[in-house]
Length: 221
Figure 1 (tube, one colour):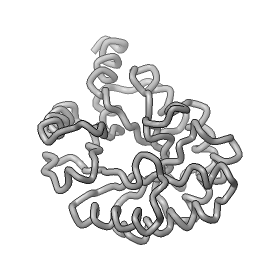
Figure 2 (cartoon, helix red, strand yellow; figure 1 turned 60 degrees about the horizontal axis):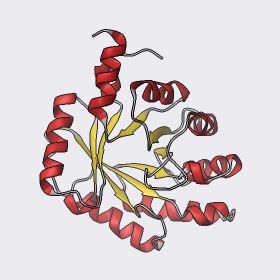
Figure 3 (cartoon, one colour; figure 1 turned 120 degrees about the vertical axis):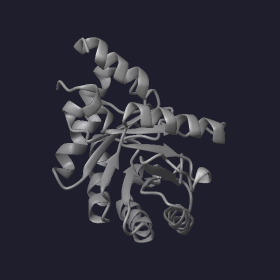
Figure 4 (tube, one colour; figure 1 turned 135 degrees about the vertical axis):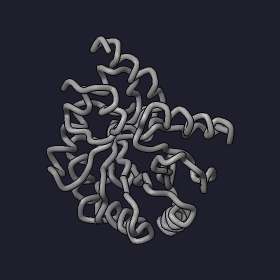
């Protein structure tokens, strides 16, 4: 795929989820996001509500382990919506998926979906920790539960982040019904474009400026 920096920027959730992040860091993230023309900023729920300078605001739920009990995830998501989040990225119970308890995974997602009516719900499946069969099954569970996106990774799992293979498999599974967000370890323009070419419709980037600058350099802008 070949695209211009402005077009790619509109696919980006400009992300800061480090535990040590401060309010000043978030203010800097927002200012940079506005300058770069990204779609949204993705921040921890403790920073909500926030003035994002006209950008969409995404946050996380059950992050990063996914091991929170379902009512806790639902309550966290509902609070984030009340605090002004436009999008919520929830983490599944990855162990439940590995065990093949896909009904439990679907019920977990459905509970968060019920708590986030009117906002975009993305489901983080931690694809690097799952087999291909599990990726397919979890994507189907997310679709059945009413999610809007499936997302590869938190970026915190030792198994790794997004891969072209996982993104392509996720897209093949959900077709055009859901968005696919690639997140985790995408640090170059080449990697970002490869994810989009594989079917990603959103990118989670912490190094957005470097990715867009690389695209500009490659294209001679």
